[in-house]
Length: 297
Image 1 (cartoon, helix red, strand yellow):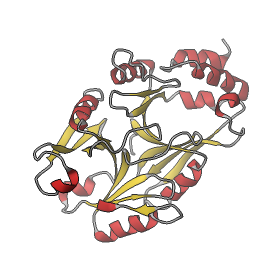
Image 2 (cartoon, helix red, strand yellow):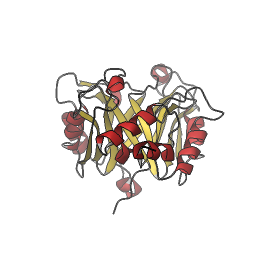
Image 3 (cartoon, one colour):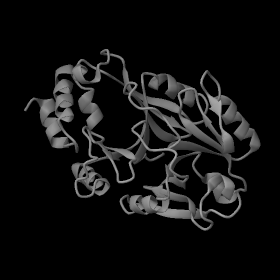
């Protein structure tokens, strides 16, 4: 039995979240839609979405958890966060590239990169060799930094349990006319957070993080919410946003989310409306206060 993911990449769409989730689930083995949440009348003055329309879709790709959020046309995907697909053969590389490039707007890029029809960036790579690589995760989120990749990896691995840096690669003189990085400087950092694989890439100043891709931290209790919120916003950083969202010192967006939140927002309409209203007044989420609002107390 696979353990629930502690950190879930969340992809922000205008209104194509369910369509995108089903498209991706049709490409990868061991993939499925696990839950579809819908907007209610509660908070319609804020979200502006028709009651009953899809709000968020929880789905798995190759056994890894993701969320698609229909949040409106506010944020656009870019290469600051991409999804690496680790392939064991050229046949696999060809399969994923062909599948992800299907549809209007998809485009090929250099070095194994591509953008799918929704604008999400992917890297389709041949991992080569065997051994431990055969058990590596199929999809690895890649975070693009301007020189701070190792610093960020050290910060994140100091926050989450079961975390470590697994490999650091460095630039060489080869290709310097393209990458323009000093030989010996850090190129990539492979690391794990709560047992999940991530990659930090020092690619330069071209791409900046935004809320189009965020990382949801799923919390069982208030002490966990407090821990991750305080660790990712040291000193009460002004990048803290409402409804459990924040930006860390590198600009990467996170959602510190209690597992108890979804049942409260999807309950009986009047109760869910009170919980939604309470959530909209919060930055860090307060589970007890949300429950009191839901209960009408």
